[in-house]
Image (cartoon, rainbow, N blue to C red; front, side, top):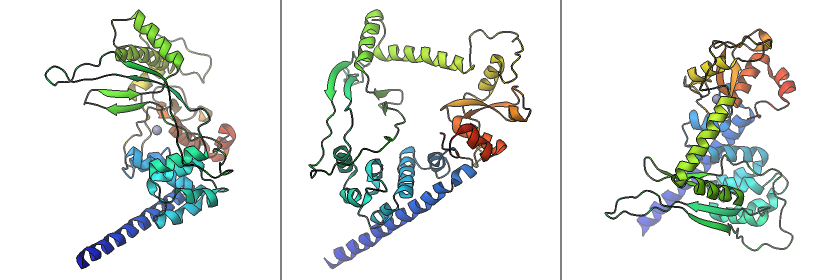
Length: 348
Ligand SMILES: [Zn+2]
């Protein structure tokens, strides 16, 4: 009994230390973000810094980024995090509804809750304005005759199942305004790895999409659903890449010189895109390149405004965030704030 009590006291001490260390880390991170020190180190965002420099998983990086931003907006969350009243895994939910104005009444509602319970509180405080009508396309997989996995069969289509958000009953008048702008989702589609070569896609689609898919199935009964979707994605991808001037099937042998010096000839775009492998070439502090494939742009190493030319040697592929950082580095913040109309680097 005495040993058990002593061990428990030891665990309790370690847990307090864990809470304190986490709170200290988040306070320092909030300061780091407030100074935009990540930009000085060449990163496109705080998330990018946490993931690439501190080697945190994307999920861990996202949690810490949200917590750091929440601490800057509502410093009062630090104490409950430090003493363990507020569980770190609830910060994403807390950040959806707690503001500098309402924290005194709203924040205590999250004390001692799990992530799921916190989500229920958020649903009660700020109900979804239009709960999504979901059409779920679920590829059915079953064991083969000898227990091996078989190819997905025709999908089961479940239409119109409404997602219900249940929350604890609230006292009258306790509903708060939903946050001004809902936090952005990277993607509504969820990919769950099934095997090394197969992933299951969960995506909420409109009734309209489901009808189009039906029509396509009727027209191409020879193709499985994933083959249909892949063909559609291929078509859009080819179109989007062509628009980027990246790849065309029939490159012109000799491009007519344009009278517009700002215009980048298609063959130059293609060459730059091919050389840079279609990903951001911004050099990070660790010597690696950013490698992002999100919102890519062609950047003039020496800007046009400073006499740079639209040549293969003077162009590179950058993501939008790093293109902005590059422009700020060359042209200065004053010029870019006027030009972009956005605060420093927040344009991502
Ligand atoms: Zn980048």
